[in-house]
Image (cartoon, rainbow, N blue to C red; front, side, top):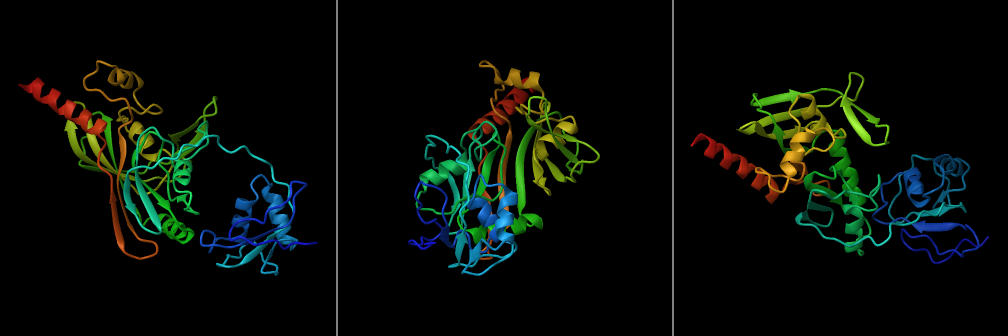
Length: 334
């Protein structure tokens, strides 16, 4: 069998449309350090995971012409042989618009942006594309762009993206060992009485009858830990800082709703009648989004080993809402 075509780094050899053929892929920076099984799953989208592991065990997958097991980590310059496999063709998102977002920090390894509210971080769950797909369109020369972490669609603020696989691996290591300090700002309905409160209610993920993902406090849920600090109380509303010690789905939102102080504008766990009142055209105060903002990330650069502080200012619509509350409070007292 003639396997050899022109080997392109991290790109498969072009194959005729007659059927699947052998692919030879040279490992570049974006795959260096990745396990071979994860590399194959990425390059064989649509192939059942069981089949990927079968071709690994059988020796049909070779690295530098030798057999490897699933735990082998690729090295820059390795040549991976992938045997002929039929890959289900998935339709790529049509017309993904290129978009650039306000940059908080950028170097050769990391990109931090200020994500606006209302924009998903990636496609899926009824969303055809998100921030990461738009950035890939905007930076076609950047061969590797991957999310370090995620933000809910309606949450604004600092979002970190890795530009090299080594940076992604290093950041995930920091997240696993709770070495990345993540702080959010949230405005809630209710007067917060404690200057600081730690919440450790366990969180359980489930699906609604309509198939939507939700989270609730439940004894057999995942351990979860948020520290809330009171910043300001204004006539029935409270501005809080939330420090994430774990990173569970909807963690801040569910912990606050569980305490009876839901986030203003939260359309999943919030006070729906209050949200409707605040979103009316003539409402004062007025807010048409969820008041949750990823204000700050403090971390160690995964490659340079230097401290980084990444901050995104509170969006204007949130600042305006707070100022309206303050003005109403002053007028009521005068």
